[in-house]
Image 1 (cartoon, helix red, strand yellow):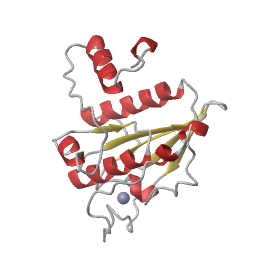
Image 2 (cartoon, rainbow, N blue to C red; image 1 turned 45 degrees about the horizontal axis):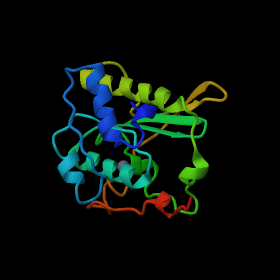
Image 3 (cartoon, helix red, strand yellow; image 1 turned 30 degrees about the vertical axis):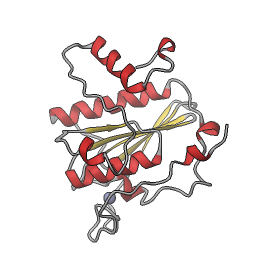
Length: 195
Ligand SMILES: [Zn+2]
C-alpha cells in the first residue's frame, strides 16, 4: 500500500492512490478520520457487504465488532504480533463475534505497547492476503470460510495451526442477554506510552 516517498502522507490517501493505480475500476471511498463512537454509525452503517478488519488498536476492533453485530455485516479479522499472525471470519448470527472470544480489552498494563511489540515486515502481507481470500469467498458465496476457525500462522516455524472458536451464549454483544447495547470508546493504550 505504502512507500517511503509517501512518508508523512495520510495512510488513507496513500492506500487510495495505490488501489486506484492497481485497478482504476475500483471506486474508493476514503474516510480520513479515526473511528469513534461518534462516527462509527455513519461510516459502517452504510450498507457494506463485508468488513476487512486490519486495525492496529483495540478501541477500533471493538467498535468494528459491535457495529458488525448490530448491522449483520461479516468481518474478516486479521491480527499480527511479532512473528505470529491470526485470521478468522466473524459472521454475526452464524458464528462467534470478536467479543465471544475477547469480551473486553485487556487491561492496559497487560497489553504490549506498540513500541515493544513490533512485527516482522512480511506478516501484514501474508495475513492480509489470507483476509483478501476470505473476503472474496464471502462476496462470491463460494468455498468454506474461516467462520468458527481461528487460523494461526507462526512465521518462525513456518506452520499453520487452527483452533475451533464457538459462539458464546453469554457474549456481551451477540449473546442471549446482551449487556453492551451502545458503542464504547475504550482508551487507546499506545497513546499513554512515551517515546
Ligand atoms: Zn459474540
